[in-house]
Image (tube, rainbow, N blue to C red; front, side, top):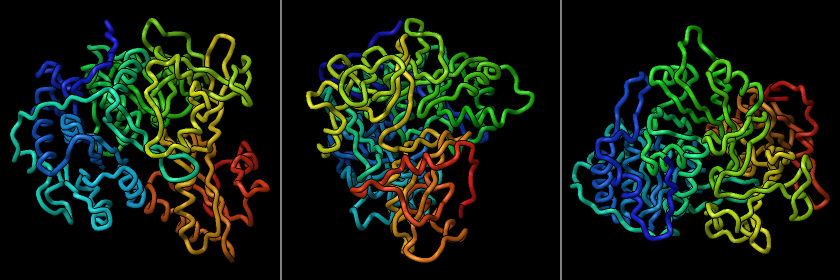
Length: 540
């Protein structure tokens, strides 16, 4: 039976997430690339996080301080996070595919001065030490041998401390996390995640995913992003449910092996992963134990839903949300909210939220089938925890109606006569590729640093595997483009922003479409592409 989590009084997050659970219960199973696995119990997490909190305190970390992690999925990551929350510090997640400049922006904006990084990530952070005054700790199996590491590694620090650090008591509005989301203009925006957000995370974990005590649950999303952190780390800990953590790089072959070997019954992942499984389905895979599958991060196509039903033994239910509030519209699995799946629909509002599709020009409900703006009715949504971006009142104001009633998601959609909500488009031009939200402005800002680039525009175009892929339209200061220059620009984005976010095609053009006031019109670039156009060469 589901007991809704309510946080209306001060609470100790570390006790809520860890200490109250049976010491011998398994919290995570950490799986290596060779499919060997190690169980991590709540008792081990408690002792490890008590040592971690003591180590952070010795380094001068205090309640409310920001501490960043640049770490992949591992037991070390969970121990670090619980250590921070035991101390009352705030976690700043960094995605391991980010390059040094993208990391620098997020560290500067958050004010984090301590970073715990996997040994293979140190080369991205160490150059920032003089500029930002950072302290960098190396974690992971290769930490001690990592080039450039100075001082003790994370394992040595833990070994030097004793367990027993008590769990800090925080108010519901105090922060657990500050995570960054990208839009089309300006720097990445900080989203403060308070302790009370755990109410919403566990509600989705129950109603949306329906994770049962007997389930083998696997959320394959990266904890450097909201879906992986909220529902792969925080919600399982709060609910006392085990999650699988697959270390290292993803491959469809390995994913198939994990599903089969570990008897996964409840699987959550981005649509790209399901499409990859479909594209690389092996011969001779035995019957899977899978009973529920869920998708989030981008719209799910009807073909993949049909394939999953036939080949995985269960349909994939599509869910919708944002970094700013987590999941809020779902095709829920739990019996009391479960309805038929309508392909293309992200379902109905999660219990605890009231959502609406507003007319394009006014804050009243759009007619059934009419395109409008997806919004949340804030007073009628007790689970809505987002109150604004960190130190950014201008962007916060853009998200809310003047009377504070409506939160505008920035996405457009429609609703049918039966209340099913359908996603249409992002009116802020954010690109969602393989489940990752990418702000065109950040990629365009990197392209602008190249001496031959006068200006550029980055758009997302349909891609069968990734959902969307990035393409760049580049105006040069002089001369003509070439395959060599296109490859150079792609590499620039990989090294200065993120390895996953480079444009798969670079188009050299004479000018970009703009409004009379000079505002870039990316939608015209998207509209100018033939619907049937396949992926073009990089020097198209």
